[in-house]
Every structure is written in C-alpha cells, then in structure tokens.
Length: 105
Image 1 (tube, helix red, strand yellow):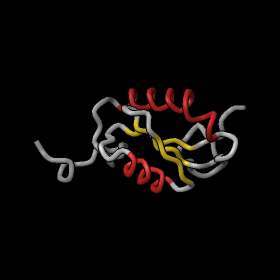
Image 2 (cartoon, rainbow, N blue to C red):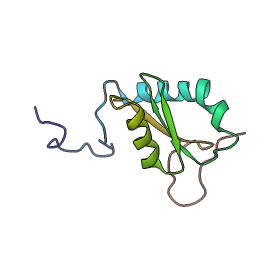
Image 3 (cartoon, rainbow, N blue to C red):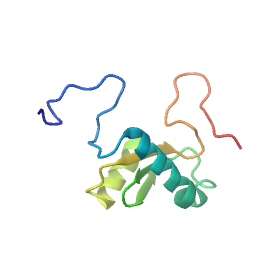
C-alpha cells in the first residue's frame, strides 16, 4: 500500500487531505452543519467568503480566501480529517467563466 504522498492522484478528485468517509457523506454532513449552525451567523455579513467545516466536530472557520479558511480550521482543529469547504451565498465553491452560481433566494 502506498502512502498519501506517493500514491497516484485520482483524476477529477482533489487529494488535498485524507478522508474517513465517502465524499458524498462529507458533503451531506457539511451542508447540514452549515444550514443548521453557520448560515444564520454568516449569510448577512460575509457574502462570498469561504467556510471550512470539520464535519466530525462541527467546528468551522471563515475567510475571504479559501486557503486561509482551511488554514484557520487546521489551527483550531489540527486533527480534522473530513473537511467540507463552501462559499457563503453560492451553490458552488468555484465557477468557470460566465456568471457565478449564486444561491436561489
């Protein structure tokens, strides 16, 4: 078995961090935590900011920069493995050309 640094990357999937559960489960839990606990606190004043959520502990960090949000979460929760990233007020983390995908209001 290869370790994480020497394993071949899987096409179409970012392998930034190891995970314990399937990506879909991390997404479901992350979205659930965001809607229940985080959205009411950030939606009005942080449109477009990035949120990193540790789906195991529910801890989260926010920043105007994606990497900074992830780094802040790692500082708070160094043992976080399953992390969900999203952008406040948008349906997708990134967009490719055209207009960004904003959430339906």
